[in-house]
Image (cartoon, rainbow, N blue to C red):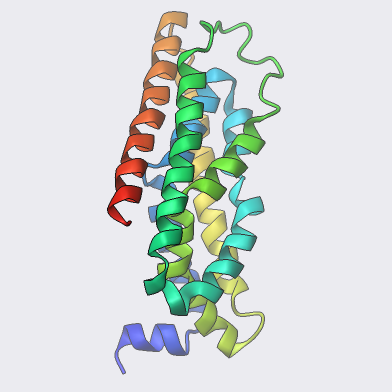
Length: 216
């Protein structure tokens, strides 16, 4: 039995924590809809809005993990579901992109105003409609969760807690970094950055459509 087989059959708590931190870092910094929304909300409002988006996995990942673990053994038959998820995600990303492009020119005076009450909701919807966490947990996370559960009902927490801590921590760091960048950005530069991030959402929507069509 090689090291990978041992990790997926009888993982130790340390092995689960190590795997979770590595995978959480990779998922946290990987470009995607949630990171793009973290940046967009931070630039439109402040780091608190970006943080609200960043913590959305705390709400969305519990059902995603549960469902993905159940579907893991049947992953090869999910092509139709995968296509639907990509197309639904594309529709929502398109709405977010258009909303950002149509936004009024911001000023540094109103960026700190309480206009970010919907940031968490946007993050939750984006993550639920984003196929990436579904595919990650179905194809990568679920095997660790199932193996950990077979060891002990408490062992899955040795994977989930470090993974989410790293994932969310990286995204919060991204929000803080972009918030601080506003100290040297002009109003026009800020509007330009918002437009660019909104166009990135639209570009992701196109990629989602292409990926969804390719899975049909």
